[in-house]
Length: 378
Image (cartoon, rainbow, N blue to C red; front, side, top):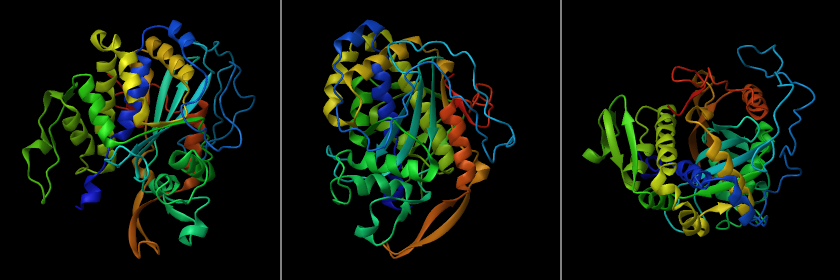
């Protein structure tokens, strides 16, 4: 396994960590202290998808490729009014960069997730987008001589290091456009985080507690260190240890995603603890300059209020069914070699995306401990 392959990250955990750190801020009254100015350039999408009232879409659309592919998406007729001054729904693009530096000039998007924040239910759903999908990336063909690359390359090519993308939203902006072009996935806001910041945040809250039902052995032929072994049972992890656990991929990328979700749940529990809640404003401020985001302080305040209303089961992790993907290879003229990619039917994925954005997939039953679509925090 190469060094690059080993740099499989939980940067998404970091963005969610910052999001939930804001969410742990006690009470909706803090919203009035925040400004409405975004902390970074907005996404270059033609029209925001924020739902500013409680009215659901007027018509349902089919979701091809699902078990009940002929069924229409069910829309709740009487959704309650949104809480906390937020929109009914916000979709946040969450990116985990493999960069270890403090800057965001380079770095692949090794973790890509879309967070659906429902201020009406209230509920948070988190969808993983596999990074090894071969996709069309807009605005790069003049620079690299082709318009397709892996999904994680969109973030790299959008950041300032290469100079391929002129929009000030940089890597998150180009990745957002790529998701829209390939999957009809509209995102309203973004947050991107690197490895170093993740470790610092976990250490800033004095580590996280996690319980493993089974042992996880991340040792490889090249690295037999005991630091890669996490035995079944309870652990208190530092930032470095949490990152190590989330990077392990011996059992494949889907098992790795499950490990990351466990870390996310542990982070959420730690950030909601009384001793951390009181320090939330200080923590948020100390890391504000170490992330890429176009969230405004006011929106962070809305998330703070939303977070205070959530129960553990209200945070749901969604994953595309593993059986939809097969391993394949594509020759890439840029790298002059055949690259690993996931082969899948994009029409089927778009069907799942439509249901995810409508809030009808996954259901709580599907996302339970034995569900096929992911799980909710225990």
